[in-house]
Image 1 (cartoon, rainbow, N blue to C red):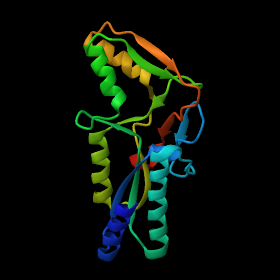
Image 2: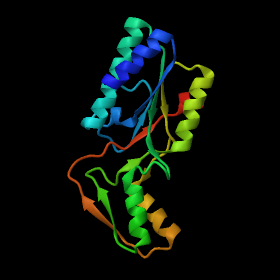
Image 3: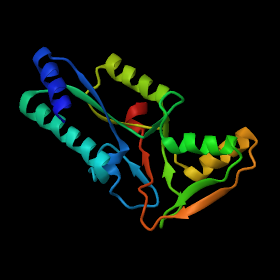
Length: 187
């Protein structure tokens, strides 16, 4: 928050548009089999990451109202890419598949966790589009579709020709299963 506040101060002093990347985690407190999250859905963060992103959003909103900060907030779904190293489960699954070892995935009370996966290059393109258009406000960025971690494991097994099997660990809680409504981003 302190680092973001310093950036906010510089942007305000120079009337520069601040482009901030937040994430789906601001919606992670919802319990649903699948939730389509539009920009108008009230935030309900869960966990340290979700709460931190939420507090950053609150800080930017306060500075917009009080001091006229110009910003674009991109709420990104789960970002992946070869150089990102995240989400770790993809790289862990790939290592297991290449080693012909069993892959351990999770199963929550509401089923297999499903994620809206967004490639890092697509997020970069969205950031460029925001700057080029001068968009201000909040926009959700994602693929708009959900894929389960089990499906990811199955794809990696097929792609590598692995003999790995998928085992599921039972988790006694719900997973958020957030899919970003990308209507505004596409328009």
